[in-house]
Length: 106
Image 1 (cartoon, helix red, strand yellow):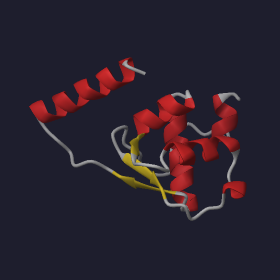
Image 2 (spheres, helix red, strand yellow):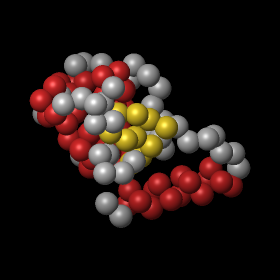
Image 3 (cartoon, helix red, strand yellow):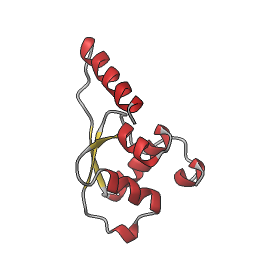
Image 4 (tube, one colour):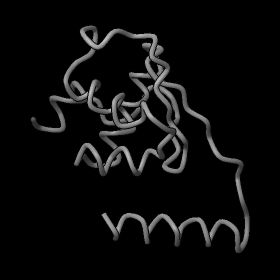
């Protein structure tokens, strides 16, 4: 499915979604109420919280498309998102390096 079909032609999420935010399924929305891509995203974070980057990799979708999908799921109440505290200096650099290493290992 083309990215514009998944996002309905939108290019930005309705709520801010951080790449390192942890996303977890709430289990409140029945599977039959979700589109296939939404369902895949919910299942990707059902067992344990996953970052937006990890969900994008699991869906094999661009990060921006995944952010829009997650913002829609937040609006539906299907997932919750916890944004990490903003880190400055070496800690932020270390987080980015870990993210890059994780993405390269996929």
